[in-house]
Image (cartoon, rainbow, N blue to C red; front, top):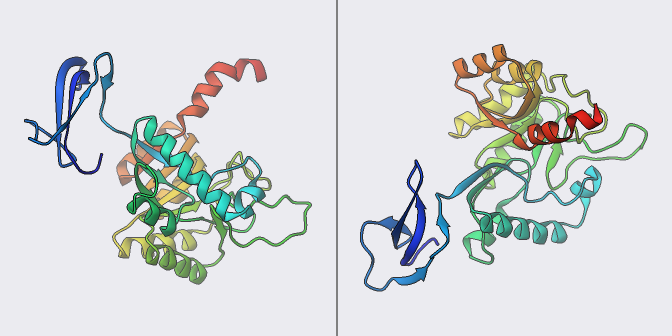
Length: 275
């Protein structure tokens, strides 16, 4: 709850080391030592109370495993589906999400207006991709144009990238997302190869930094991660193929890793069967 007062009774409350049965008092949307006089009471006997979870890599606008449909399908459907995904995330216990590739100020406005239940919402807008990069949904044998979609935009060149970053920050983006390696979802790019030139990455970082923001990069391999962080990227998304030396270099430069843990879980459960 964002505002109002509530007392939760008989709950098993996580205290950092284990669960302890106690009452929790929320006054004007914040945990307090004592209840408010007008607080509602919720009996949570048999239930557990834990701190709100944060999903640091979320995609509200992901609707399909087909990249072109994902990008160019009806925005009305995409937005309604995004609202539904956010509401479900909240019900799973996520009180903050970071949408890195997608989202826009309209979705954020709807959340601020309480049009639907949602976690606290941070978005980057469409991720920036080079032609033929991870955000380019075109297959090699199809002759069709693509410039932008709901989750990605193809932008090449330093000047064009500067303009794209400025537009994202103008329209409420909290950070900037770029694609600096191939991925399992894109059709024409090797997964290990670094994407964007050093000059292009630095231009994006310079624009974001000047506004007090930062850049997150989709990057799987050590080669792509080093290329990203040496040019100022602060947050590495995925990083499944990095080695120990790359992780150490990230730590020295103050870069963060947002790992895709589901991939490791799937490899552990299914890897032997498909090897």
